[in-house]
Length: 167
Image 1 (spheres, rainbow, N blue to C red):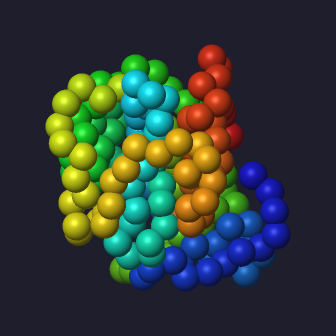
Image 2: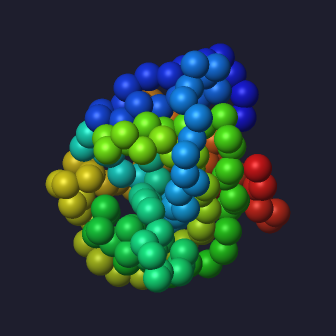
Image 3: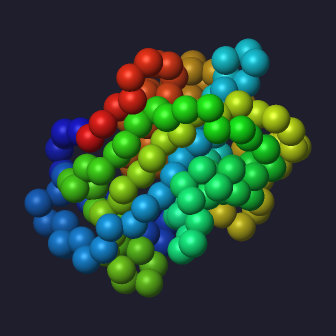
């Protein structure tokens, strides 16, 4: 991922995307995102309460939890949709993306994006982390404000490539 420096506030977090003024990360945080495709090839996205930006459902992997369980849990919590994990979109470890969290911790994300299919549940945002959940077409996604770093993951999810993205 490359581009011009874009350190900016996103909700209560500060995100630095290849910004030379970014603070040094002090911790690598494992997280998972889920690329769930509907039968009509739509993609499940959620809108964050803190920033209003859209992204794939997901979040941190808790201590003692495997990545697949975290992906299923986070998707259900944020969107109401129950999923079965079917594969991997990619591994995202770009050290140029740094996040200063609300608690002051400076993080380098280490994210897995997993493919999934919906198996149940009812589409419903949790109203704590997400304000909306929706099945969206690529054209609809193109018109949305996305979270920093989300475009890359969403594009790879929509491409349905046979080989996982590794960075």
